[in-house]
Amino acid sequence: MTSDPDRTLDSLSTPCLLLDLPRMERNIRRMAEHIRGLGSSLRPHVKTHKCGEIAARALAEPGTSGITVSTLQEAEYFFEHGIRDILYAVGIAPNKLPRVAALMDRGCDLTIVLDDPVMARHIATTGENEGRRYRVMIELDTDGHRSGVDPASQSLLEIGHILHASPGSELVGVMAHAGESYFCDSGAAQLAMSRQERDRSVAAAERLRAAGVACPVVSVGSTPTALAADDLTGVTEVRAGVYVFFDLVMAGIGVCAHDDIAISVLTSVIGHQRETGRVITDAGWMAMSRDRGTARQETDYGYGLVRRSDGSALDALIVADANQEHGIVKTMEEGQPVPYEELPLGTLLRILPNHACATASEFDRYFVVDRGEVVAEWERTRGW
Image (cartoon, rainbow, N blue to C red; front, side, top):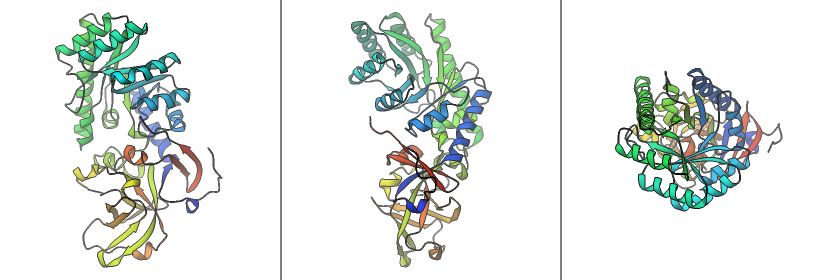
């Protein structure tokens, strides 16, 4: 939905979510060119933005094919936007199979993931009973982060044989997510994690192939490991999501700069508390989310880093605390003066988020900004 090209930030009701179009397009190109240069394919994870217009821009890059989703609602939404090749990258539960089947019946090339022989048998049996063939990937745990099967385990081969032998299932390949990369705060550590993710995923695929189980796809990915990668031999596709926006957590581990962050929350100054050195805004945790990811990093930005409405830096102001609808802005260093003269009541500010996925999830649309003008409104989907 395109808006009046002369629309300005002053016309928007706060809090609202801004998307800086040139920054986002630069971020999309950066990732696509990097993965393409390493000879692999990019499968963007759309859980960060959940927006058809953004997905279309990411998929327009050469070497980018298919998408990754984290909910079946996302799969349904993006299929309706013309995308057929979809990986649902959260372990499948039996109660979700009817929705998976419905999407398949409509022509969606939907792939599901699992990491347990019990679920593999259930999927295989269900597919046989329904007369359909579920596309499945085995989720790997390459870094002890979350879910997934050990690439060196016997369970990997057991799952592979179950899926390979049944007419009700098709083993598409293996996939991993190096979530621990979010805690790698140096380029060397991110590179090491990227190589570990690659090596363990490729080794898992080779074990399956040696056991007579076809494993055509080796899928890895996180934004830090994708950008750190220097060699993707054996990897057929890379998944990443937050790279389209970036955020303070990514900046905190050196993956991006503050000026690369493409989304922010536009907020209004609604109060001064001079006796306590605070400025009050109308963007509390319902706008910024409860995510405090930078609290574990060297620099803690509270609920977000404050910038002027044009995106330029202010003198070390953060949203130090938050209530449901109130943001409490303070200086990062105790005792530093608050520039109240720059922040009269009604002043518009932009807040850079800790976690782009979490902050974006608080809103139903983006106000797309290009060189200070609001050039479009793009709706985003929500739900499971």
